[in-house]
Image (cartoon, rainbow, N blue to C red):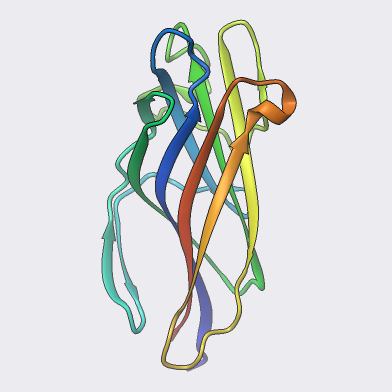
Length: 175
């Protein structure tokens, strides 16, 4: 049986550098993408060869966070047979009503199909950060772990929102 290269992207931590709210913490929704495809927020148990089983239970889509705060997260994406993986995170802070955009509601009844960039309007600010990580073929009996950090820096486009997301890319063979 032929072995196939498998790539897991694990998002582990969000650090808020500027929540864009002057008087209170921001009310955020975060969305994670691997190769421009949304990573669904479903609990999953995976068996990573040579590393063992891992159960990943998404712990958020909606978080209240203030400037300087850090939150642990456990969100996992998956792809296979690529030489590099594009990883993106979009976050939106709504200052008035958390359900102002129907496709971004707190109950998860609709989500963006792709990263939504960086911008603002009269009721919200949003930012997206992206990085690309190489996925080298691992040795036969090992996995390759590559840490990453994404800086969603809205300040570069005049938006008062900035956060960083840390995680790791795990490359292994299956089959």
